[in-house]
Image (cartoon, rainbow, N blue to C red; front, side, top):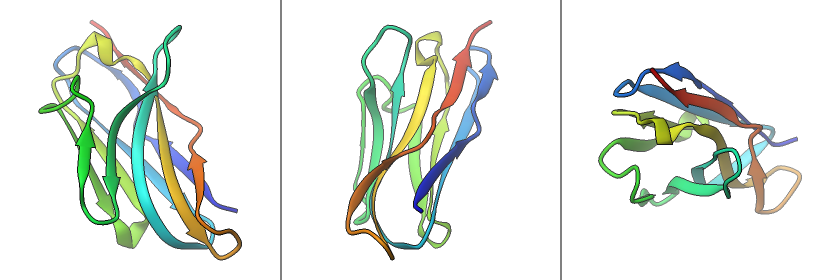
Length: 120
């Protein structure tokens, strides 16, 4: 069974940093795309950053210059380095990926989410 597991969330002060991790497991054959979304209370889920298998990265305008997405393909893991955090970054962050496994063709999966709170 393919699953995505996020870690690294927590409480930080404005201007601080966090690194989120998302590890994919369960008979992984290929990972085509890995990305991060976030959802604040009462708001729609929004794309934060995405990294393709070809190395292309894209970011929401609100996080450009502050967040960096990266992949370790040997570990089937994607990271989100978050710097200069602002209170408006507070949200549940979700890992998202489309994956081919030993049991299913290319399928989109979501992680369970990890809470990031930026507050003084």
